[in-house]
Length: 140
Image (cartoon, rainbow, N blue to C red; front, side, top):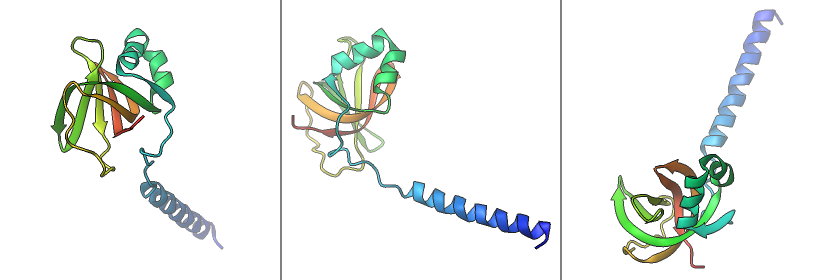
């Protein structure tokens, strides 16, 4: 086999491997948040205080982790089809934004301001508020 044919065959094999890997990653199933085990469990005020005291240390501890957060709802809103619960944080302007999981059909839609809730979420970090995604209500 000539040098050009070998390169062409290797390139085609590489392309097939890349396509299969890409397909597998694209179709990887999402983690079931209702069954996921929490890495940490704390109140929304404790979570906010951790980020406010030392954001870098809080990122190392919580970023990308499953966190069970308990707190009182300060605000309920719907943005771009995603229900968001804002839990108490620093007692003033900022809190913990919990974006309910779009992949879970079992959400209730009657959350009330002042209600105490427990949510299991993935922590995405601090952007004035602590932001959580893929949240599901727990009953602990």
